[in-house]
Structures are given as structure tokens and as C-alpha cells.
Image 1 (tube, rainbow, N blue to C red):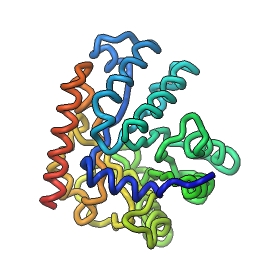
Image 2 (cartoon, rainbow, N blue to C red; image 1 turned 90 degrees about the horizontal axis):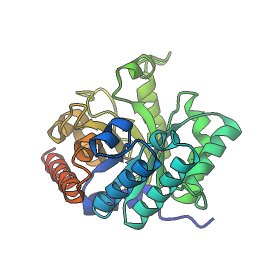
Image 3 (cartoon, helix red, strand yellow; image 1 turned 60 degrees about the vertical axis):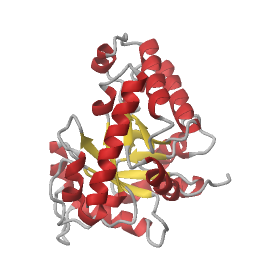
Length: 281
């Protein structure tokens, strides 16, 4: 399997050229209804194709949430395959938001589903859960390196429930979230311009100065828009690491559909606001 240029290098270039914005593709039932679409495979396909048409040629990253496709069974997964392929063909990097996490051969199979170059769902990066132990992710780390793909590891998530695990303190005095960041810093050591192994860190978490966010890799930051964070908040939350942040906006863009021009304009507004915030930080 011939590797691509590493994900970290491709992502850094896309962020510099298109702006550091990730648009989520989250076709949940209420959003389909807002667009005047039925909650069925035809509505799913129309929704996804419209988002790709509107923004895949302009934003750095698209992030389909696999659960909203999987709920329609094999036909929904077929739409997801097409969405990934069309988004990548238009020049966007695709982060598959599947949050997979398991051990041994099962983790390896999850990795092959999304990170093997010949897989129908091959994506530029995959979100993964490390809460069976960071070492359980080894098959995904190895395959990502081999294929030129990346991972985004759940580290400091924006959901309130996450704190009971991520803020738990280890015997060495470091909490679990900080431990995950340290693992990722080791994965990315020496990579230039940026490593391929990123963390998911919520933009709604406030001051994170007690954490070392300098992992030499990207920080995928959900929470901009409907969850309450704004682009202007990014420098205060992420400090010196703000240049590596990939803010994710879903509803803030998607609510402007199904009009393609309105979707495109909303994405460009967010991208401009994020560029300005990063420059000010």
C-alpha cells in the first residue's frame, strides 16, 4: 500500500489555503425536517449531496457523523461512502466521526474500515475513543501511519458527562485528559509541519491553560455555533496552541440549507471569523 503524504502535512496546507474550518455533516431527523426533506434515504442523500456541493471545494475539512447514516442500514452506509468519495474528490479532507474504540483484532477491523486505502469508507482521519486504554488504539495508529491518514483522539470533550472520566486523576497526579494529550505529543514528536495524531478538545471548556495543548498535532474543537462558543473565544481557550485548532461548526452552517449559496456564505463567514480570531491570538 503506497502511503499518501501524511495527514498532518495535508491538513496544515488545507488550513493555510482554505482557512481552519471543519463543517460537520450531521443529517439528524430534525435538520432534515428543517430542510423540508423526509427522514429517509432519499432525504439523507439529498442533504449530504447538497452540503458537499456547497462547501467541499472551499473548506479544509468535512466531518460526516457516521451514526446519522448508519441508522438507515446498508443504504445509509452507501450514501456515506458516496459522500466521503465526493467530498474528497472536491478537495476537502474528510474526518470520519465514528468514535471507534475497542481492543485487538476488533480495533484493527475498525481501523481497516476507515483507514485502509482500499476501503470504501476510507477517510483522511478518524475519531477514536481511548477509554479502553490508549494502547488499545495501536492498530489504528499503525494503519494510519501506513496509509498517510490521521486520528483524532477524544481527550477533553465538551459534553458535561465526559469530565467523570477525563478529569479523573491518575496515581502520578495527572488526569486522564492530560495523559491522552501526552500520548499524542509522543506520537507527533519530530513531525513537520504538524503531526497526524490530533485530540478532540471542546471549544466550550473555557481556560485550558493548565493543560499542555502543544502536541505538535491538530486540535479538533467542537462547540462553535449552536453549542455556544464563538470564533472570538478560541484564543482565550486554546492560548498559544490556537494555530493548530480546527474548529468544527455543524448546525451554525447547516441551518442555512438547503440553499447552496446560503450554506456556502455561512461557511465562508465562519472561516473568515476563525482566521481573524487565530490571527489576533
